[in-house]
Amino acid sequence: MSSAGERWTLISVLFSSIPLSASVAATLHEVALGLYRDGGAMSPVAGDLVYGRVVNLRKTVALGSIAGPAFEASLETERGKGTVRYLLTRQGLEIQGLPSAPPPRAPGRNLPN
Image (cartoon, rainbow, N blue to C red):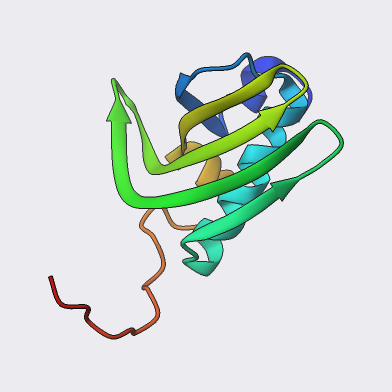
């Protein structure tokens, strides 16, 4: 996908405390997509211009008519440290051939409150 309109079909930024380049947004998309596919909770991010971690918030959020699974990234970039909250759009998940409902989580033990 080459145009900015097509890229933002895949990811919608809800909040960012740092400016995002197209390459950082693409990296965040790929990491979140992996977490979504695998049902993972957290994944490191590392690249030429960014490092940090992405957390799967395990909830669906909506902003107007855009909705999808939510993620939060804690990053260090060439532009400084920051936090990014974003979602994978349902339309973007469909383009990837994925259901817009998350995959079932692996069974785990219940922790006491």
